[in-house]
Length: 180
Image (tube, rainbow, N blue to C red):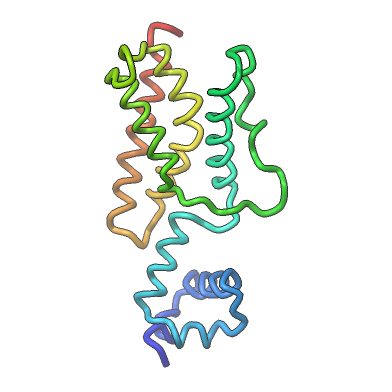
C-alpha cells in the first residue's frame, strides 16, 4: 500500500476529499489512486483545494470582477453603474480560477500605484474609494477568507487573517471618509 493508505485516511473529511479528488481527476478507483499517491502529494492536493475549491461561486465573483473592470474602462461614465451581479456567469458549474491570479495581484498593484501617483498625479480619495469598491472589494474579502480557511497550511491561514483584517480596515476607512 502507498503512503496514503488507510492510516492516512482515518478522518472522514479526508476520505470525502479523496472521493472528490478522484471524481475531478476522472479516476473511478479511489483506493487505487490512494495507494499510488504519497501522503505528501495527497496533502498538497488537499491544501490546493482548501485555497481554490472546484466549481465554486467565488470563481464566478472573481471572473465577474475582472469583466466589470474591463467594461468600466471601455464605456462612458454614465454606463459604469452596473452591479457586479450583471457580470456573474449564470450557467452550470463555475470554472475554477486561481485566487492568486495575476489579475487580482494587478488590481492591488494598480491601487497602490494610483495612491502613489505613479501614473500621473496621486489619485484623490474619491478616485481611490471608487476603484477599491469596484475592483478590489468584490473579490478581496472572499479571497482572504479562503486563505484564512486553509487549515492545511501554516502560511496561507495567517496571511488570510491579516489580509481580511486589512480589507475590513480599508473598507471602513473609505466608509468614514469625508466624501460620503
